[in-house]
Structure formats: C-alpha cells, structure tokens
Image (cartoon, rainbow, N blue to C red; front, side, top):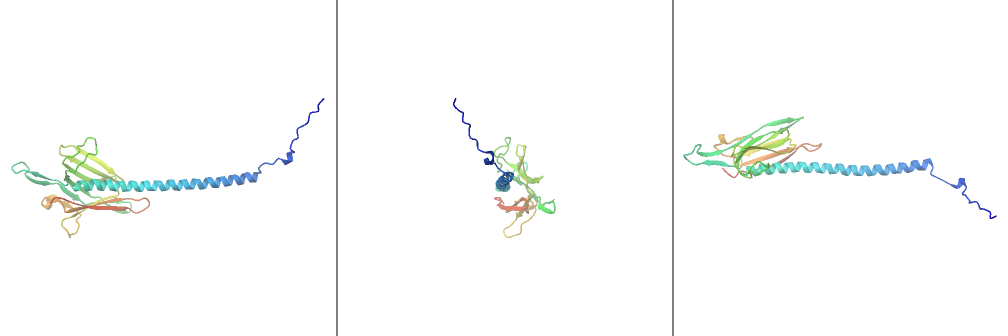
Length: 220
C-alpha cells in the first residue's frame, strides 16, 4: 500500500489580514480624495454657471441695443401730398420720463414711441418690412417692443430680461444739455438730433450695471 502524503498547510498563525485600524485609515484617505474631487468639480460648475449668466446679460443688452438703434436710425416722417386728407408732414416721436423703485434702488422706467420704417420680422405673422409705430417700454422687468403696422396689425415682442431699468435722453442741438422728455407735436414735428439709450441690468450679488449708447437721428 502506498502511503498518502498529507498536504502541508500553512500554520494559521502566519496568515495575516487587514486590521480595523488600517481599514479606517484607508477609508479616511479615500474620503479625503473624493472630497477634493467633488470640490474641484463643484467650483468648475459654479464658475461655468456664473459665466453663462454673465453671457446672458450681455446678450440681452446687445439685443436690446440692436433693435432700439436699428429702429431709431430709420425714424420715418410720413409726407402726404398737398390736396389730400392730412396733407403735410406727420411724425410720431414721444419720449416719456419715468422711474421705478426696486428694493432700495430707483431705476429709470422711460417709454419711447416713434414712427419708423426699419421693422424686421420677428414673429411669423409680421411682414419683413413695413411702416410702423413702435413703442419700447419695460413690463415686469422685460424689455417690450410693440409694433403698430400700417395694415392695422399689432405685434408685441419680448426682447429679453430681466432688465432693471430703461432710460432715454434727447439732444435737441449740439452743445446743449440732454433732455428727459420729447414730444414732436410740441417741437414743430421735429425729432431730436440724437437719442441716448440706457439699459440697466442687475448683476448677481452686485450693483446694477448700466449699458449706454446713443443714436443719431437722420431726419430733421
């Protein structure tokens, strides 16, 4: 009979595992690594959101300035031939001065109405070009463009928000002070020489920031 050799087993006392202290230290190191990674991604995400919000504010300012400047640069005075009803030059240009209170701050809340031929289609139901009387104002912190077309159709466009303030000033003659009001009916049917536009946008956790430009009016 061939004797069967028993396998040699390692003594139990030589088998060594992780101690509770080592496991706790390892978990602590992993937790610290995860915290550092989360903090990095969180900062990157917050920075990205801040940049996007700032970009949105500048986009609103650019869009509002674009439409206002475009419409004002094409102010229109309707000329009716002699012998017809309403003969003569007819100009719509009225600027009303106003203010609005938001918290402890006061912002401009002006309204401007004028006739123009610069209308470009925004909505699918509005013509691409037409005579129009356009009104710019703020409603619930949104910049509103209201168009009354020559065919009687009314179009209302929301150009963007939130906008804290909308202001206009008017220059009658070079070298003179800017005026807060304008009414063509009281100015012998004349528009101003130029119009200053101010859009006030609220920055996050900062004071409101004004964007300004001015537009020459081509007709006198």
